[in-house]
Image 1 (cartoon, rainbow, N blue to C red):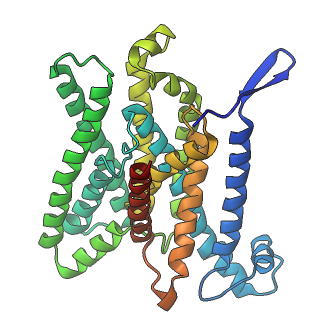
Image 2 (tube, one colour):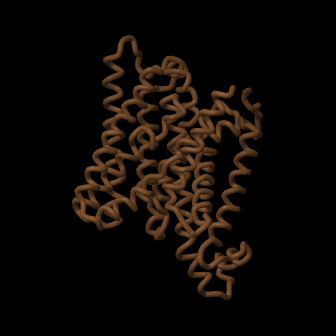
Image 3 (cartoon, helix red, strand yellow):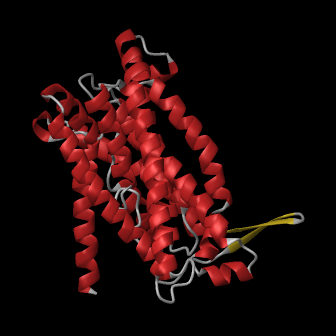
Length: 355
């Protein structure tokens, strides 16, 4: 598949490289997010048409119930889901680029499982509330990420002929993460058995990943964290593309490979921890969003912005599908994304074998 062509936009002494295909994909994703937002805001026990949703959002609706429903319940849920999808999509793009592996997403290499361990410990052992649970999830995700990085660097240093930052080291990061995630998954199961029935039910509900009962108290911390971390990721995205060609090539271009890798990993871990703390473990989004963004744009650059938009669109679409299932099943969003992720992986593998 050939790369999409580049164009140069000149503004006096300044010039900007851009790809028309990437811009069109970005605009299409923005349109999809807006359409999904209107549909989600009108979905529920009180069904609203798009004009009624707009009237309720702007305060021009004569139905006070519709205004309260949209502004106080559905809008915070919608924004939480969109921000979580953006954070996971951007984090997935960074992890896949650094590991040079399409499976290098935080939910597959143990970071999300580590965040879940901290949350379960708080629920089972300390009977903590939502704030303490979210804080523990964020902190434990960071601790597990640091452990995975330390072990992968140690193993890479002991490997035969493995230079720093080579492809073997990148695969080692994935393998160590999968191993740590498997261990922590077992620990989580033991903790669930230790708790009483009510605590286990609360922990299991959190592990399912959910956007239910999300309020503005979830939106603002998530928006603040994303606003602080996303500019760092976007600023270093072009350098990250150079890092994919190898550490030696990056150093020849004047890029400090190790420092850049550590900065981007910390940023991606922060995004993952924020998303997990806000909505619980959400599978599939961090894995599929960067891959789909690359397929659509055909660009060699790391698609951090488009992966964020794709992540938001995927999570919102999964939320809409979960609310509109027959028999009013209304599955938790984490279970729905996991189901869709399994189908996506099977489709990708079968498509690869058929070529």
